[in-house]
Length: 159
Image (tube, rainbow, N blue to C red):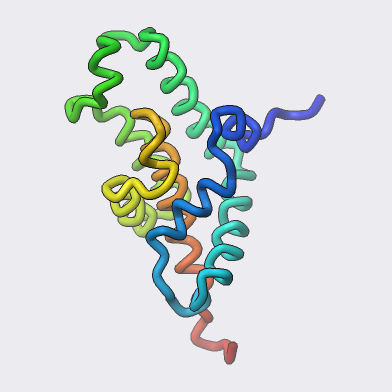
């Protein structure tokens, strides 16, 4: 039996790989190993594919998918649907999920990149609901941190 891929789940929500890459590249800056946007996109995609192959990460993302779905239906326990829709600052479960994803994927560097993307909300992040904007920002933050870290030539290389 084939397993369901998290990319298919995200696609069904209108969150496509191209949207994730495009959003990530809106805050791109040249760095050793990713001196051009084209290099950065290729390395980001490699790191994204590596991250999304992890079942634990897929389950964290899926938790956000389910929370978003239940929030849209007004079914989240102890939370009024108006409060869900307004993404009140007192609601921090979405932030905790985004932070968890960013740190899981990219460590402490991922946390810093998550904050950059969560504040700026480039591209698709500005159109997503209260949970999924943080989930995708966490994914982008973690993957972006790995892109910059792993793309840099090692000190012993002559690339």
